[in-house]
Image (tube, rainbow, N blue to C red; front, side):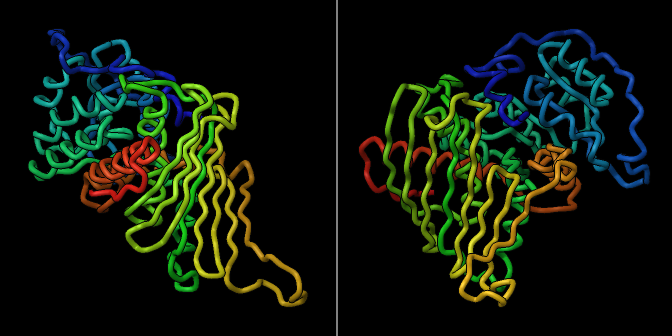
Length: 389
């Protein structure tokens, strides 16, 4: 699945497409012929499109984000930038950008942009996003926005100070089945949410991005998704108590008990010991409990809902009664839409145009990282931790 390519492509530190602290290249911009766009996908009306650009044309940008451009009629991809000209030219050719740059500042000076994608490892987001935000231009960064919550908060404050905003690539908020679950728990018949729990399991997790250990790396680089997901449904986590068990330096488990600001409770089982291969064997379960009702989503593909009312009364002694969603392959053939990549790109474009509001922002990345830091501290001697956002 393309989601995991960020870790496979750039597993350590700043690589590939970092533009900060590198000599500026002086080659003139090269114009690239723009490929015709499909009339089946593109809305050819006179509606204004968001003029967007990319900083970073590495593995994740190329595999998971840029391919959605063609599916979003609100996007006019005007330029791409990478310190490796070949990568920038390839992505311009493949995804329809008109101009190519190897110098980020040159692109920002010359182009009139409504928003910019900055795609790379977290330290690159922290280094490069301020160059965009300080010009008052909205930015999209992948998750997380930085390695540390303090750095993520700094980015959010820079955006605020310059009267702009940033979106973070928490694509699960736009995934089909999580949107279905959100719809169900939002109905009057479901009632208040009392428990929000999740499990995320994979194989060994590597040490990445200059972080001091794999056990901390996983909390930052991978589980930030899960921490944002539980916040998306349950709101802010108030207190938690975590335990840690290590089998090898790259195979370990965290078990976490939590209470949310709302008073709801929950548990997390997040580990790298159950499965053989780190980024192939992924297991993900979200469980949402109301009173006499619950919803469970498995692997972003299957949903089970036990409503308060039985859907038949012919055998009252029998139970449980559950509504199930198991898609046909034709229903998930566009995996980028199913898993939320298309939705997050479209949301960024629409928000740049003022057509929508909200969405996962730089403050959400900060809060996700705060949860990960609290779990690490709690499991390494701090006991019960109250999170101060």
